[in-house]
Amino acid sequence: MTRLGQMLIEEGLEKGREEGRMEGREESLRNIMETLKLSLEQAMDALKIPDSERAKYQALQ
Image (tube, rainbow, N blue to C red; front, side, top):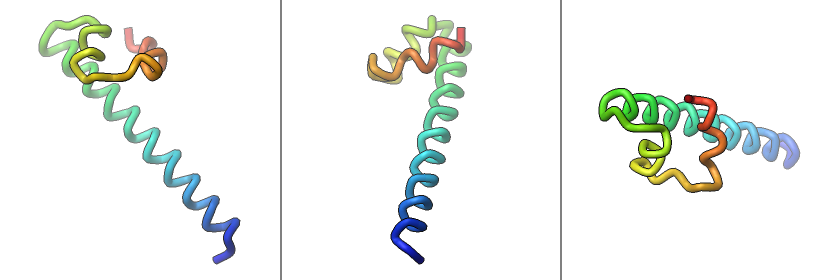
């Protein structure tokens, strides 16, 4: 495999991991909000989601 091909595969895998992580966090946030009756902000605090990533999840409300 060429170096370019390897780089493209690695980039695709990284993108897939990031999307999977975000989907998992969205599900976790929804579950915590529903089960514990928390606001989105409280749920993000509970999961220790960094401030720099919180804007991604604001659409959940």
